[in-house]
Amino acid sequence: MPTDHPAPIPASAPQDFIRQIVRDDLASGKHVEIHTRFPPEPNGYLHIGHAKAICLSFGIAREFDGWCNLRLDDTNPGREDPEFVEGIKEDVRWLGFRWHELRHASDYFDVFYRGALKLIEDGKAYVDDLDAEQVRAYRGTLTEPGRDSPYRTRSIEENLDLFKRMRAGEFADGSKTLRAKIDMAAGNINLRDPALYRIRKIAHQNTGDAWPIYPMYDYAHALSDAMEGITHSLCTLEFEDHRPLYDWCVDNVDLPANPSLWQSVVEAGLTAAPAKPRQIEFSRLNLSYCITSKRKLAQLVSENFVDGWDDPRMNTLRGLRRRGFTPAGLRLLVERVGVSKQNSVIDYAVLEGCIREDLDATAARRMAVLDPLKLVLTNLPAGHEETLTFPNHPKDESFGTRLVPFAREVWIERDDFAEVPPKGFHRLKPDGEVRLRGVGIVKCTEVVKDAAGNVTELHGTLDPDTRHGLPGADRKVKGTIHWVSAKHAVAAEVRLYDRLFSVPAPDGEDDGKSWLEHINPEAKRVVSGWLEPAAANVDPEQRFQFERLGYFVADRHDHRADAPVFNRTVTLRDVWARAAGQ
Image (cartoon, rainbow, N blue to C red; front, top):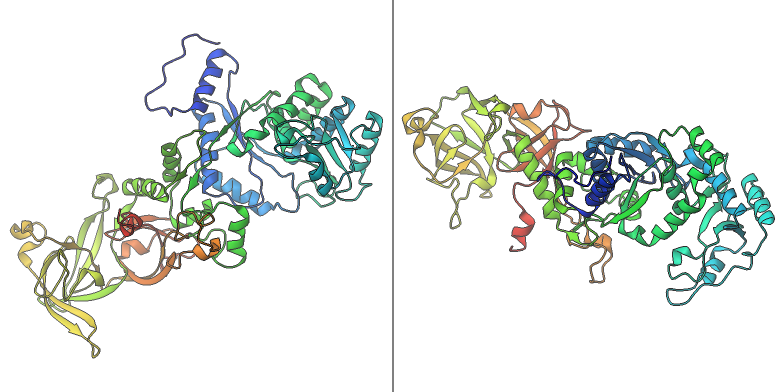
């Protein structure tokens, strides 16, 4: 029941104009349940920009105890693929959402057709013989009105006959179009007799060769929302100018007032009553250093700039997943960006920060060395081995502990040693001391070089009094470094991924270069590293913080316990800001 005094909004509840509209509609009694939908076209894989639409449509339905449909907008055969359908379903589930019903626009082809017949019978649609170039010439411009098609005055009987013959497949592709009869002088060009149906004699992935004509997006989308009982149709700002046409289609087909059409809806298996949905637009999620054009993403794949749609350099959801980005981190980004009608570009560092924040809390710690230099602790016996206990997470005891082997020879990172250290260097140097993580303080006593003068090995001594639990363990030194036991280390392939583009606006830089020339050559580097055993024998997609190095994930396709492959998700700090001097 409507109430004049709706319940107070919890302080933690998201606050934005769309949710306020929903709250007002519930409070007034306009709706008793909220129904939304996410309607992607299955002509490619979802990307980071879709994450906002998914989180918003599914999230609002969840917050208000309603439901959200996943609807595949498959009205454009030839560009769509069942592989993309499965990919979309997988991505939505991975982000943490479940749909109420899985629908396809093609489920309603019969309803769309009957609705078009009704528009013709009402004198609101006509069959046009103008070709695409002529339609553009007749449409007019932003400052000049359009002109009526010479076929606009056809009789209802002639239009019905021609449209039924279009349906029967009598005419060639592009020879005729069904258009709405609205207003060729409308200030909004979308209302200048827009196309509702076109002829395309191409097989459809769901309906086969049953239909030689297919509905246009604006028409099919509006009626699909109405048929499914959608209350709030959420879409991005580029559809704002299409809203009058959306409303025109809903109002003029008027499903609830037409029993024959409603019977077709029932036959389509829908469970909600038809509704008059309200379209509400919001700004897209635009990130710097990103490309979201499906055409350009496909070009990156087809021209082998990347290794497929799930390459971790791609900002497709499957690429981000393979890189180790988390659903919770992406949802946090959407929450932080918020919902507005103001287009803006969000710095990619905001996304990386959200991923770091989630992984800092959820990723167990391990030790790995990616650029190894051997350190031999000469005051330990040649066969010395022991097992140390390390916490899996320094901030959360619930993660438990693990056993880490330690021996006389260990791998350390090469850049943790400097023969001629720069000012402020607090790691290992000749005759210098550093704490070996979880072991004790070591001193570098000798630097071993090859004939070319390259450092090949270090010798040092471990101060036994500084071992964990002994009186000298509190002795202070300025640096602590990580390590991996050379005897027990597991060799791994480690792929160091970074931003795919080297400039913030790769397809908008005013430097005369093609967007492809802005691909970052350092976006992928492959190194051979050493892991502690507990990091290797894990399942694909297991995420860790490799201490002092960054966050990494076991590759979901290539990782095996006997041949580990890890992808760097994100560095521990924003190295791009540091490089820019911020």
